[in-house]
Length: 341
Ligand code: SAH
Image 1 (tube, rainbow, N blue to C red):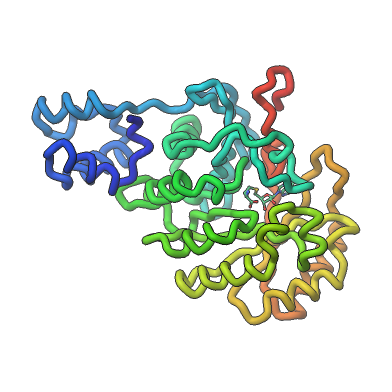
Image 2 (cartoon, rainbow, N blue to C red):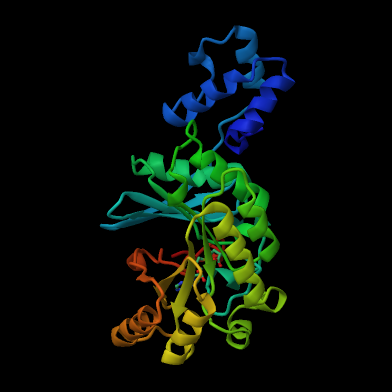
């Protein structure tokens, strides 16, 4: 088994299974994640225990195939053990280094504006492959990770178990110790898993890709809305917010002439009502789709109307466009050689 697929809890259970003291799990976790150990020799365990650990646990990581870097962003193309590829992005933000990880190879959600969905899901990533993305970034760019967005390719709540284990490892004090408020999982709105996420022992932050203030428009843009309409998504998000006391982010890509009118902004504010949610406006990153981003004036106006109607709105800073590493630009079809980039 791959060590990076184990949460601290899993590792404790493993030690119990091999008739050893589960307290050893914390020592190992700390040594591997905090001090960069990649074998079991330095922990003062007996030869017998070391032999068992070496027999059962490996430290295999995805292979770095390509590395690109600009002033404030970087991107890695990683190859997984079965020859599939995955992309991971590093953004150097003011508060620190934030990474954006993928959870699936391809995506089945079919959002009209998103490039990742152009290739159907080939498979879910395993926990160690998501953790591996973070470790690869930390190693390649010799940096500490201060924030994590689960917003790369794939729908994290369509791969819930691995996503939940990943956030547990990444936020564990003995793991990579990223502050829970700085770990954000973004979903297109898979309702049952929003409840499940809220009920995790240690949930992190939640972002919902809303992108439209009513069902008619959202049905057009995001097929998942036919299964889980807006009212149900909002109810689930409210449950999360009440349970965790974390403020929910509603992501809203502004698409020129489609969802950027004053009327949409007012409707969005009405939808939020008094809930403790905020809107994160995302400038659309051009892909080869039919959509375009509105001009800066239109964006500022949308933000103004939201604020006039009592909604907190932020504008997402654009990162990595020069690397084709911006939101929605990660390519799902890079495995076809010659089409990379
Ligand atoms: N499946 C998850 C996470 C991956 S997408 C989700 O839907 O939230 C991460 C964010 O990028 C989502 O809000 C998504 O809607 C947005 N996005 C997709 N394509 C984009 C594009 N071309 N420009 C800007 N944002 C985009």
